[in-house]
Length: 296
Image (cartoon, rainbow, N blue to C red; front, side, top):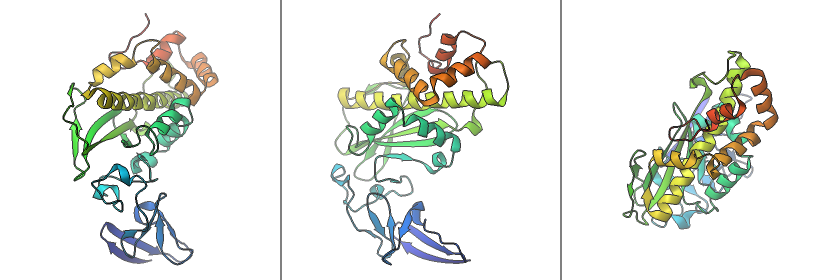
């Protein structure tokens, strides 16, 4: 194998030449467009010219980051951020490499709630200037950051504290990191008696679908309260709002679970494996976090 390297100001592009095999996916895993012999790399929203280390067009969201050149890439921080589709919702490599998480995400984004969330947070949506990142981790957690438009630095907004954010200025934007548990590290327990592999897999599936809705609700609430009230509310307060029986948040999680997993499959699984009342089992799934209400 022959490896040719081209060093640019934002990284090293490697071309691996293997007899009979053409590798078209190069720098950051993007496809090279070589029909005209130009060697441009397709980043979705614009093309990158590796030979000159330049973009052939401006960032379509450049007007939101006036302190940066419209020809920059991820605010000059390619080791911290990526821009996989030219929009403001990204999936990390670890997330994309998890078949379990990608299956969950694929089901979730087809639901009414998932479609609305993506529409609101994509580049043309009402929260299009907020960067959302989905990642794989060892816990389900949503973290909020202020990102400086001047130097790209991140400042954490503590999840356990509440306080005024009146000092938030136009020189900062919001960055939200949503981490979800991969099934490989999932604690294999649930409200069923059988240890059958099907029951374990199915419980992980329905829990995963609820987890992504739950964490994106944190993101939605956080953005609205920070924008409208200039105040950050703690995770505990979020849970009190989200966990009220018959609240909009409760019904979003319930309806999304039915749409992503399917009511018929939920009913079948319940009849075969679950030994407690149906409503108690459902609420174990969708209202099992601290501060949530539960019917007695």
